[in-house]
Length: 101
Image: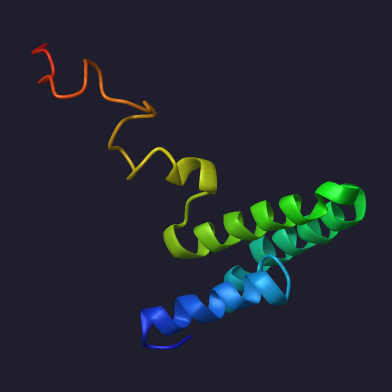
């Protein structure tokens, strides 16, 4: 794509928002995953009725997240890979050093 990562990410985001979910993955060459997100976005629009915009936004956000970090949106929420091993919060109270093992 483009050499400038900001421009590249902006084009991907515009594709997700205005073209079809999965556009960012297709632009990266991951056509299968991009088409899957596109089909899911169209299905969400057809099936969910009044909740269709929410479903489409979530599918587009997942596609964009996969194109940037190769992780799904629920994996990104847990922080960097291997940082908390699936835990949401470190053990102990805030401001207190962790207990030695």
